[in-house]
Length: 219
Image (cartoon, rainbow, N blue to C red; front, side):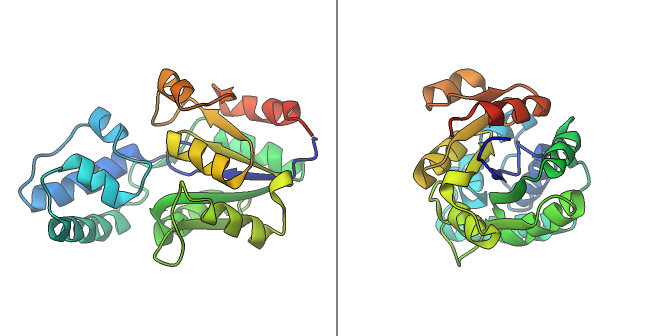
């Protein structure tokens, strides 16, 4: 194992396939307010910057007051449907078991609502992930590095020990702001060409490739 001791994961598009449950919740909110709904591929590009950004992308004409109501509707629906269609990506549980056995500390930081992040982390990854931090009014969301720094503090580790794993341009910017290397996964919400344009350097096509990439990071 390299001197890296800690893996900080994004959640949606990295550990969990959440897109269909997110789509259903967004469309419920839009439908309730009389706005047009969106299909799965459209939804894929809305997420990464938090739910207000996603809903604004889904309905650009919405006022701030409308967005507040859409967010309320989204949260109400999503809280009751967190795991309807959400599952870990193929290979993720094997990856986490491998990292756990090798002694890595693991955390999740996400722009998803904090309560949902903690619920999903405990439900799916309770054995492996000891820190899970989502979006709240107590801390700046990604790409600010605050959630990453908070996770490091809770785990008792430094930036020099840490690696970030995510699927989007937001994750790349977050890792950059935190001063830690990023491994970018290609099974999530963004395409490789776009990620290359955003400065991604290390890619994993499958979760099983991540331990090898960790071993290649400079000490």
